[in-house]
Structure formats: structure tokens, C-alpha cells
Length: 119
Image (spheres, rainbow, N blue to C red):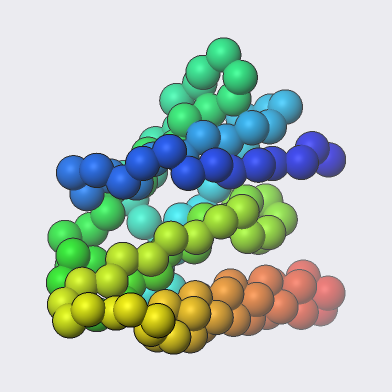
């Protein structure tokens, strides 16, 4: 099994971009509000893959919106990003709580899949 590393590049024009280092092309799952996003692209580069995530227009609204990037094969979390819009959110714990909720949802899905596979 290879170690997959995700590095943030930029967020611009509603597209979040990162770089993935791995020995083989990864299968990724990008989730927002419990749903897998469409508009996720991987393009090969000389030292890995560039990841582009098209952020849905619904996420560009008031509140805290968290996205979780995971390895689809293992459900291991590779990274996440949050968008906060509206009133200033200095020292706001809502981002952390929202991230914890997203990670808990991911763990619940993995647990249910393991239980289903064991029966």
C-alpha cells in the first residue's frame, strides 16, 4: 500500500486545487453534506496528480461549508477544506464542529460497510 499525500495549491474561481503524491493513480471521494461531488478531476503531472474540485454554487452562501477528501478504496481521510461566508468568523469553532460532523459521517459509512461485508 502506498502513502498518499495531499497538498493544497489554491482556491480560485470556485475551484479548489491540490496536488496528490502517490505511486499509482488514486481513486478519490470528495464529499459535501454527505454526498459525493461531481466535478472532481485528476490530471497527471510529472510528480503525481493535480486535483481540481468544482465547488458547488450552493456552498458559496452564508454559513460554514466543509468538504472532505478521502481515498475511495480505504475511506482514509486525505484532507479537507472549509468555506465560511457571511458574518466574520474570527476564532469561530463552527468550522471545527462541521469538520468533525463530516468525519463522523465518513466513519459511520465505513463502519456500516464493514458490518455489511462481514455478514
